[in-house]
Image 1 (cartoon, helix red, strand yellow):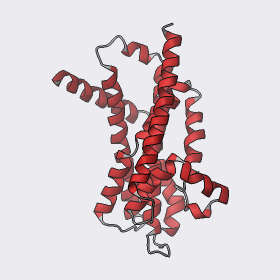
Image 2 (spheres, rainbow, N blue to C red; image 1 turned 90 degrees about the vertical axis):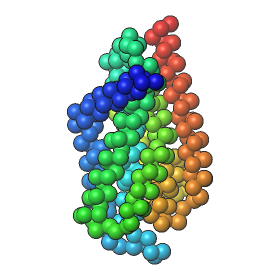
Image 3 (cartoon, rainbow, N blue to C red; image 1 turned 45 degrees about the vertical axis):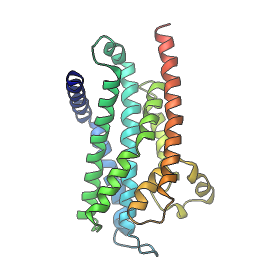
Image 4 (cartoon, rainbow, N blue to C red; image 1 turned 135 degrees about the vertical axis):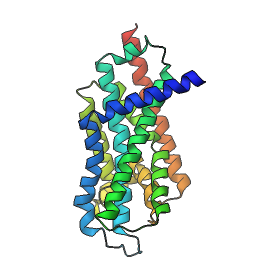
Length: 254
């Protein structure tokens, strides 16, 4: 157990260093949620909805969901595709590192980076936007989003094993950005076109957003409903990942 734990720690720290030294990943995932809140949130941060919920808190929760989801989708999608393109996956087979440890290190790295991204965003919203909520509310939002991010981990792996390093960034954008917009993460759902409102309840990002919105007081679906939808999408994306992985392995080692 001790050698495996040391392997996990070393691999996780290595993954963190790689991600932090990649500005296209680190700066983008830290800066974009803050930038989106600046454009969409700051002008209305001190307003309230008719039900008394803070507009600023709603948008901070929304962009926190976007921040965590994007770290997972882009981090795993582009990262795995890049490693495949550089044959890192083949090199890893020649090391004593178990595949499960390598995957767990990537997940822990993504969770750590997601936590940092959410903290930066919330602090910015409080200091610059004047959004006021109890600390327990923001802790609840953060814990829910980190715990509920598994579908986007699986989606990232599915993209990473399905596309090459040059295609994966475009594919991740093509999938995740429309999901985020259509689920109400950038603006309240009732301000989107009617056909989008009808589609939204079937999207994983919608139910992911519900986890965060309910924590800041927005009337939302029951927690178990959100978790059930997210679990279903996790199973779907994992099935797609395994199919893409097995296809690639059969081509490499046939």
